[in-house]
Image (cartoon, rainbow, N blue to C red; front, top):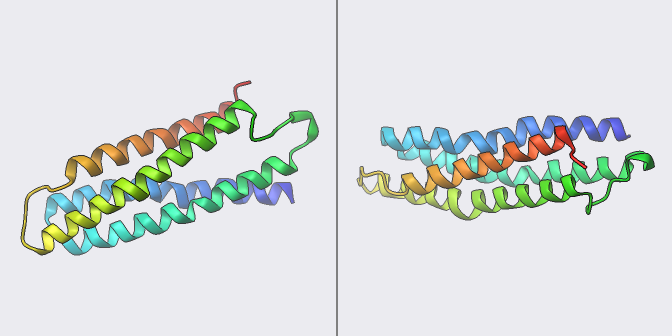
Length: 145
């Protein structure tokens, strides 16, 4: 069971967290092109993948709970705690800054406003979110004590 959860955790990280980080960058390209429909679709997709990324956390808790006692893993293990905190901040940034900014930008484009409304907010917040997710990957691989 531990192996299955570990596989689900890693596969989920690749196929759920990956798009959560990359789709806003595609949204920026659509915003530059003035494609309101695509920006709107990417905002919705970013929202869905961000929520689905919670499955990766659930699988991670499962892996942690089934880990061999010799590893002494818990939520208070520093690299696990920092991974949780960094992931939570990335998730909140996506859900409360990136997605609303993408939705607003799509609405502005639909109204004919061809400016880059929200571009900086989307770029900045999604960039920080991506860096936080990279830090989580580093912690998952490195596992400093």
